[in-house]
Length: 207
Image (tube, rainbow, N blue to C red):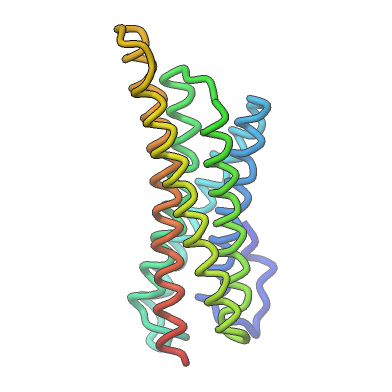
């Protein structure tokens, strides 16, 4: 968590949202590495990021309760924080589902994780440019939405391939397990899309 290093000239809400986005980005990068290597240190990092993200959100909500004047709409601050935290949560539960269901990562899962991380990268850039270069931030938000569309295409293709497999009990059980893991990454990308929508809404109100 990066709270002690805050720039006092920066609005507390913008800093907290930026820190949430950075934590989310760190977790999605760790997920990519975990899917490639199975390294438990990466899983531990994701869990730590998820806890840090929860704490950042708690602090942000506390600040909202204490602060009358905010840099943009209070509801937008709340929703953007929520969706960034949701991306983190689903990144973490993807790892949990892999473990619990004993699923081996495949190429589709790795591809979805890569696109999710790219969406996280775009959201971080959008947050960094939100106040000084809002139209550049809007472009990054749109790119994040584009990555979500790519995740959904990969998800549909992956599920279609599962249903084309052999019609036996073993395959059906395997199909249900891996589809559940696919769904968690798909949900993470969906929340990234929601976060991008809120950023777009903020920029429309600012300009």
